[in-house]
Every structure is written in structure tokens, then in C-alpha cells.
Image (cartoon, rainbow, N blue to C red):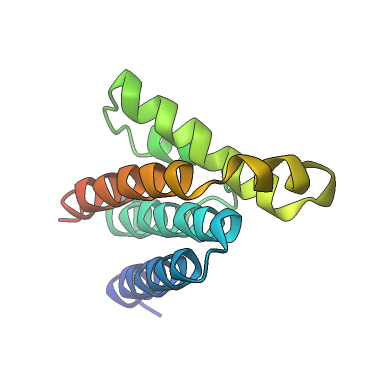
Length: 129
């Protein structure tokens, strides 16, 4: 698979995950909606990585690390968002943490973060040359 195909793979996968996040929100499965929001951003970072670096992206879920590997300038607010969204990946996946995370995932909390994730998603998509 060439660079363009790999880039397209990551973008299409990110778009599918974003659709899943929306469906999960509609079904009131808020913690997993945020988990898929994380996957969306992770995959867009990886698409940018493949496009710019012409090699496979690092095997990590840490969004700040991926941003730093691309030398992207992020505002303090964007860094804070990426740290929080990375935590959603861990908190939704591991049962000990899941239950307290689920309690925090109210409709308002989830809606607020999905909106921020969408804004970051759009900002990142503009970084694809």
C-alpha cells in the first residue's frame, strides 16, 4: 500500500469512527461515544503522519505524543483537550476506571467534549496537504 492509500485508509477509518461516536451518543452510550471520539482524532493524526513522514505512524494512543511527532503547534487549550481525550481512551476501556468514568459522562459532559473533538477534527483535517 502506497503513501496515498495509507493516508486515505486512516482518514476513512477516522470518519467511520466519528459516525460511530455520533450513533453511540444518540443511543446514550456516552462513555463509548467519547472513546470513539478519541479514535477519530488518533487516526487523523496518523493520516497526517503518513502523509508528512512517508512512513507508518507510531503505535501509540497518546494524542499529544502524536501531535509532537508532527511538530504541530498546539495552543494550551488544544494540549489540554488532547490530554483529556487520551484519558477517555483508557477510562472507557478498563473496568476499574470505567464505572467512575461512566458516571461523569452525562449528556452535557459528552456533548461538550464531542463538540471540542469535532472542532479539533476539522482543524486537523486542514493540516493534511
